[in-house]
Amino acid sequence: MSMHNVSPARRGTADTTPGTGWRTGCARVAAAMAMAPLSGCTLALLDPKGSVGEQEKHLILIALGVMLLVVVPVIVLTLVFFWRYRETNTAATYSPQWSHSTKIEVVVWTIPVVIVVALAVMIWETTHKLDPYRPIESVASAANGKPAAAPVRVEVVALNWKWLFIYPDYHVATVNKLVLPVDTPVEFKITAESLMNAFFIPQLGSMVYAMSGMQTKLHLIANETGIYAGLSSAYSGAGFSDMHFKAHVTSQEDFDAWVRQAQAAPDTLDAPTYVKLEQPGTAAPVGLYANVMPGLFDAVVGKYMGPMDSSSQGMRVSGNRAIDDIIAAANCRVDGQLDSRALLAQRPERDAGAQPAAQRALTE
Image 1 (cartoon, rainbow, N blue to C red):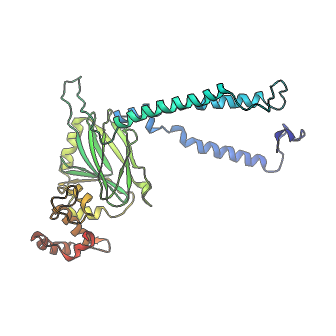
Image 2: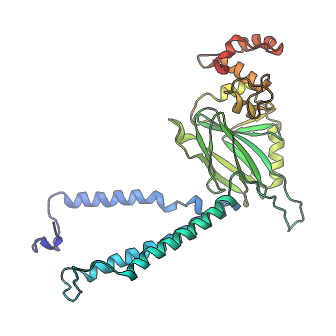
Image 3: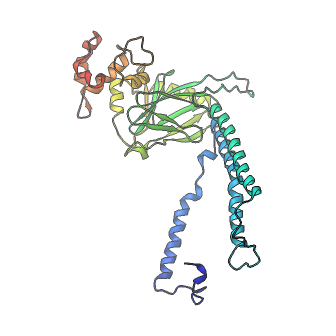
């Protein structure tokens, strides 16, 4: 129905239907309440705290600006055409037989083609420059004359629904808490215990998927100290909404002090502890472990692979003690609880090189 057909008697008058004012007031209050939580929101991607995040921010803004070169003129011209060729404007030229203009065709095709080519070149270059697998060069502090920092290695395991961070060089691990030194490259190796997740710290940079039986990599660096939100950005089930963590970026001195504190933690992360930890659960508290079992991350990656020859590169090598320990502990669960006596009973048999019959559950 055309708006020109609105009755003059109704135009510009208020609706006096009983209850209308009350409903309108409630609607306005509800809208204000809905907007209130957004008043303090910040866009993490546009507030980067690391080199990778900064470059990604620039890419987003440049791409947005270039695309607006098409969007804004189209919106403006659409409004101009609506106004100029409105029904009441008898001065506008009416050309029902018009069908072609070479000038218009050149404009509407050339400009988008140039923009697409420019975006393609820019994205091609930055995609390779910001490749998550590409190591980040160490940052030397020119102000205090310190040498370039060596990368910190962190092995990430996505559990259901929590994050396990292993520091293989320090033999410590944490749950739902990541501690990193500032201005130091970080080399992440990422996998998942079962369901696929996505490891993401928006203010530091790229998102990378975590998949069971596979290993992905990510290189990041934080240029400012602070506490940044981390999360899984891929839906993985009922506990997905609780699968988040805090990334604490500290000075090198504070990081070294934290490592010493972690190494003195009373809890250790061995195969039985890992099997208990990987059981599904939500809102897991922050955990700290010392004396992490050597090869734990590789065991998590390789435990779903069948026994292979040592000549098979990248696959499970038969006799890998860490994998055998995890599989044995997993097979000694009864109603989700670890049967420690059954695990201890298997130890002499496995030490002798034999494979317990119960272990077939994960290796066949």
